[in-house]
Image (cartoon, rainbow, N blue to C red; front, side):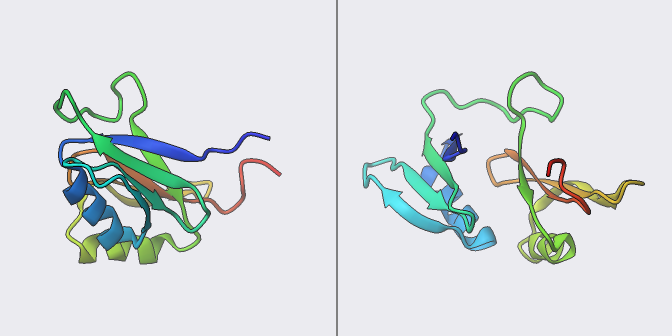
Length: 128
């Protein structure tokens, strides 16, 4: 069986980005290699992780339609609560909370380094 163990985010400032994810989402730090520019693993409630590691070649932020992996989607069963949390932390919202005709709700936002993230709440799973 394959699972998604972690997603890596290459960061300009690993400490600041780690602090942002911990503050906004309450992720738990489970690894810190304690180097000058450290690598961190942050644990989510579902036991998946985000790795934050140092960039060697910083680039400008892209948009959601550029080629390649462009966003991370976090599923939730209370998108209104998560949206309020984003607002409480003055997170940059790039697409406001909306619900499509099928009842799927989304909100797109950026972390402090410009990475695109979004919350999604589905009335029914895509699979059974």
